[in-house]
Every structure is written in structure tokens, then in C-alpha cells.
Length: 289
Ligand SMILES: C[S@@+](CC[C@H](N)C(=O)[O-])C[C@H]1O[C@@H](n2cnc3c(N)ncnc32)[C@H](O)[C@@H]1O
Image (tube, helix red, strand yellow):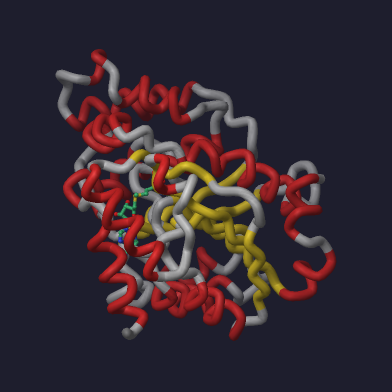
């Protein structure tokens, strides 16, 4: 099976959520995912924060992130502010926002996020194929820059090449599988123009990371998986979804017993860094420090 066919086959096992990804505001996304206990951005936050602190070379140094599959600016909201996923569910799935227009949500959110402290000095560029979600995240002030582009099918627009050159850290939650090595192939020549950024991806156990790892390796990266830890992405949307996912894991030789059989889609964490940096500080040591 080609890599394309593998990813397509795996994606068919997962419940289709496309209808919630490209709305003019995040209310439907948060309402639907709250029901499934979608948790991965919150679990990723402390790990991303550790990496940010390692990448901040001086106290007043601004760290630049590129968040792949940024959606409505979820990781940006969590990383810029002292907020958790339960806070975001409370905010976007609240009664106060249930009867207002999308324009009003944008206006209220500009004020809401604008009034919050930003303890981390970070800049977040977000990339997602969902134009409306990216537009919301920019207008609400969560993203410093939004790129509505699908790198699986199209190249990066020329003018953004300079903006992406200084990126220090590429992040993703819930996105690998939709995004494959094709997107990394298009990003790598651009983001490695200066100091090559670290790549921090939370990846469902369902998806092979090897094709992306191989592409990164061609650019001098070494990928480490954080061993012995899994991260809850969300509950299964149905018994059927769980059955299909369990079957696919077994087909790929991954034992779901005591893991996905217990009711959740689980992700693992992969960190890819230039080989000299990976050799200097292995992932366990880096995340412990
Ligand atoms: C499960 S959501 C995760 C969103 C966010 N990172 C989070 O954790 O809340 C998956 C995201 O991937 C985006 N996506 C799907 N295909 C994509 C592609 N080819 N390029 C970029 N983003 C894509 C979707 O639009 C959606 O926003």
C-alpha cells in the first residue's frame, strides 16, 4: 500500500469531524469535542512549555512557533495565556455565547483574550487548511499570523517564506494523519533557512510517524519518541469507531490491550531536532530538566 493509501485507510477508521473544523467561530468545535472529552492540547501544553523554555536563549527572547493544524488558535490560546482546556470549554460552550452572532463572538473574544496576561513571550503563526477557523484565530488576536493553506495539495505561497524562516518550534496536536510527509516536504526548505526549528508532534498511535521521520532525517533531523507515555486525545465517538481503530492497530502490530480497548484514542509524543542538539540532550533529560 502507498503512504497515501495507508493514511486514507486509517482516516476511514476515525469518526469524520470535518463539519466542525471550518466554522466562522469555535463554538460548534468546542461543543462537539467537549462531549468527547477532547484533551490533547491541554496535555501537550506542559511539554510545549518545557520546549519553549529551552529554546528561549535570553530572558527577553521571543520564541516563534508554527502550529500545524492550528484550527481556531487552540494551542495559541493555551500557550499564550494561563488557560486550560476546561477553561476553553467553559468559555466557548457557555450560555453567554449561545445566542450571539459570529461577529459578536469575534468582538468579545478580542476583548477577552486582549485583557488576559500573556505570561509567555511567544509569537504563534498558525497553519490550517480551514480558512474560516484561521480567519477567526487571527481576528480574535490569538494568532500573530494565519496561513490558510493545504500543503498536502499546494505549495506555500511565496510571500510567507521570509516570515517562516525564524520559526523556533513547530507544534501539532490532532493534526498528523491529515498532514503527512508531503506538508513537511514543502515546509522544510523554508523553515530551515536559518537555525532549524525543533518539531514537536503529538501523533495518534494509529498513524505511522515513520514517513515524516524519514523526510525530516533527509534534512538532518533525529526523531525521538517519548517512551512509556501515552496521551489521551479523546473518547471514541462510538463503539463502531473503537472497533475499527482497534482492528487497525492490530493490523499494524500495535497491541491496543489496556489502552485503546479502554475507550480512548491515544497519542504519543515525537520530538525531532537537528542531530547535534538531539545527541547533546536526549528527550527524557530535556523534558525532565
Ligand atoms: C482534530 S483538529 C486539531 C486542531 C487543533 N490542533 C487542536 O488540537 O484542537 C485537526 C485540524 O487539522 C486541520 N487539517 C486537516 N487537514 C489539513 C491539512 N491538509 N493541512 C492543514 N490542516 C489540516 C483541520 O482543519 C483541523 O483544524
